[in-house]
Length: 80
Image 1 (tube, rainbow, N blue to C red):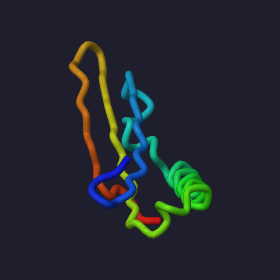
Image 2: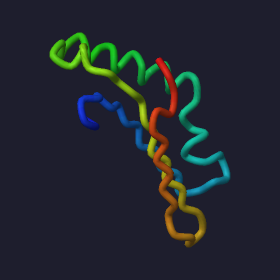
Image 3: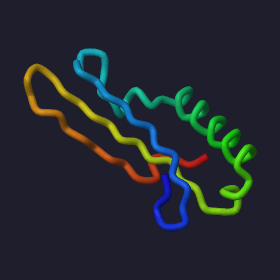
């Protein structure tokens, strides 16, 4: 996605049950490294975007036992 001239890589995570942790907690170090590698690959394949600033956002959605879903959008959630 673009936010002005910034290329934003967005990871969306949903958890229906919180018993095994929430959506935000599921973006662990292994997942972050996978996202960074994917972003590098994209920027190599699409060099027109490589000179733009980039950031990683996480959208975490949690729902549990009939409670309405809560969306948490974390801009610049981690650095590469």
